[in-house]
Length: 307
Image (cartoon, rainbow, N blue to C red; front, top):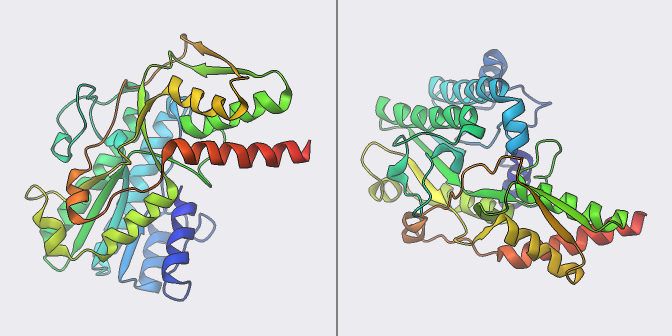
């Protein structure tokens, strides 16, 4: 996901004013490497989109690594940024930061009010720490403006690395394989009942661009005192089973969809209340249904063309 964010920011602001770092440029898990790169470039703003993350299977299988890596990445970047006087930082976080809430949309005040979903709790602990570190830096001096934006489930280009794919990309890949193989059998993990709010990577980049442009006084005046995080979702929510059917519509219902109830569902719902962001002037624009189907058509055509 970080790579897709970097590409979008470079496209919007131009390569001359943006320094885009890949894992090959700097291992952010290393404190010395991180300090060196920040001291060298002395940026006016850092967008921290780097993370070790994935779907349910990856989270369960790599819980300790997820905790270690994400704590190190955030600690090294935020600490080095504060040490070398970087005035502004935007930390990209996930709706996994919130506790399990199914009866309503999640608001910013829900942070730290309950237990995490067990299948991703180590990632959740790490990402909450990053949010709290930003708040702590802001308390040091009013010259710092460190914020966090919490996105709903992100999908789109460069988000489909295996075995780390989140459910939308995994579902897309499995649907394509079912068609290309000729079996048309699509087996979906879990019951298919959990609901998910998706947001396309292009809307994510647009949101980051917007938040960068919002002056500090205007941004923080709409938040609870002492906090620095804001929600960003698309407002479009479907069940996992409905997402499978959305893709199935592209092939005229030819897919035979089954659900493996022996596999974990994860949290039953995690939809964000993005009203604060809307008041600032930003709303996601991309239709989840239309974009998913468009991506499915394009990627399926690409695969069939190579068969």
